[in-house]
Picture 1 (cartoon, helix red, strand yellow):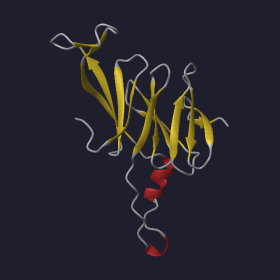
Picture 2: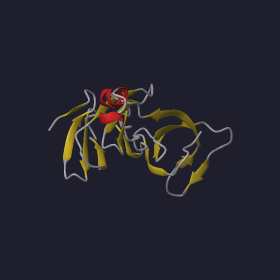
Picture 3: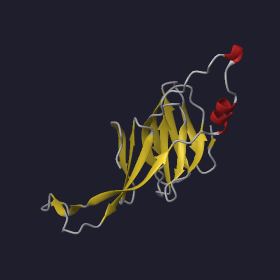
Picture 4: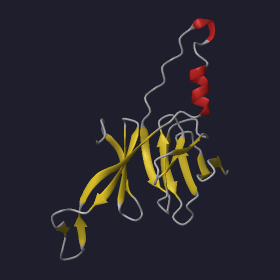
Length: 168
């Protein structure tokens, strides 16, 4: 049910009812808060009325191959019949929620930014623009279609994650 390797990042949804976790296993797991059969524990009851509840797996999001990746796989062996190099395992480096919690956003070890529908778990976009690993992912706090990424290539890019396109 959980990840098969160590976690790389976790983040609460803005509503606080879901958590997205990502891992070196190439998956994002979305966990949903469930009502508990027993009364929840209170954390710091004197100061804050936060309650701890049970969390169950809601969905698992996987990186699907896009058109570029499918074309490379379909091309078969390289020049002179050489076998193409096996692709490196996909690692999800960081995850974020759009400000309306409708989208799950992630930066991946193949230097792509990926977008999923948070209700259905369907991958919507694979966005390319970085030539080195992305180390910062930020969703706009008020505009659900905007996010930025910063990579070790020195680029900071602004994206429209509804259309899956680079804006700058």
